[in-house]
Amino acid sequence: MRILGIDPGTATTGYGVVERIGSTSRLIDYGAVKTSTRTSVPERLLDVYARINEIIDQHSPDVMVMERLFFAKNQKTAIAVGKACGVLQFAAAQRRLPVVEYTPKEVKLAIVGYGGAEKRQIQYMVQRILDLPEPPSPDDVADALALCICHAHSEKIRSLVS
Image (tube, helix red, strand yellow):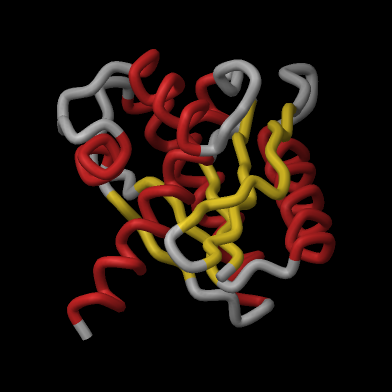
């Protein structure tokens, strides 16, 4: 199963592609889609949409996983992230690519084993699990890869229970 993990944003959208083969997760690709603050929000969303479509075309994932947006302290940030989520889910829907969402706590539990884990702990565990030479950066990329690993673990558990 090939998993595309997305940490959405209008300034930076982190992405990761991980393949689950048996009980192993293998890194395929990762990076960040960065947009210019000098362009309008619609143009930035179009940039994110176009780049994610390229990534989907290049890697042919079986599923897209994203963080479930359920609250935010900064309303302006929440609205911007919500817009990016909509554009990303639209890109997936156009290709009949299923979208699965996880809460931050679910991801932290799957990666670190503790729902209150810090960003650096997530980065460290993603580095170890995917055998990377250094922790993935920026945080958006680490979060996208963590989402991939979370889904891979969830699918493994579901297959054992079935």
